[in-house]
Length: 225
Image 1: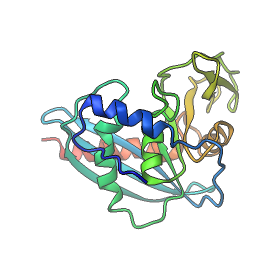
Image 2 (image 1 turned 90 degrees about the vertical axis):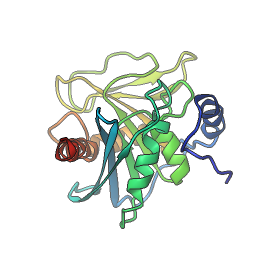
Image 3 (image 1 turned 45 degrees about the vertical axis):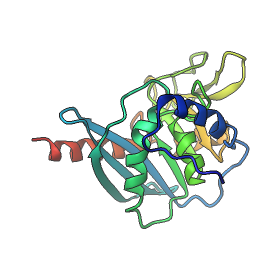
Image 4 (image 1 turned 135 degrees about the horizontal axis):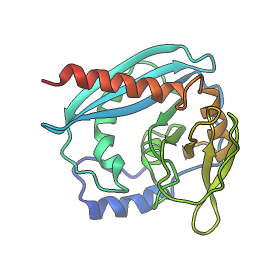
């Protein structure tokens, strides 16, 4: 496969890369024999701009926490809408170098194909890692949808401006705001929402990224002076 560097990329080149990488995204597969799921999140300290990454591993489907891996580094890439993976991707890949277990599927706190270029962080890193990946976001980035039912498990389809399905709007807890689930790579829309629902317990967010979010914040607080 052609190499697509993620470090020190100008926004212009990054957007050109996104077009090529989006063509490599596969949403036709359904991953088999999932045993370990990784939730990925990053917390930030403002002065200086430091990222604190946590990758939390869970067994599947019983959702037992296996281990969390951590890494921190200065983050030089600015926040640019649509280019989150170029800001967070290098630190995530750096953290993954520490992981000893074989990860079968990633859940990212962000978007998959529900992205202006069809390449959110879950799709981008899913392609680079050649692994099944799902984007599970708290907020919509693009698309239109009808509000799902109020009960846990209710969902509706998220569609782009052409009416094409790009994800699901999933209620993971009764009478709570839904999450926006989109396939990243090597998984379909329905399969992605099914796995997110199976990874959800008593909270709005699925356990892998809920714990990763908590651990990243704890790690950040330990590093704050």
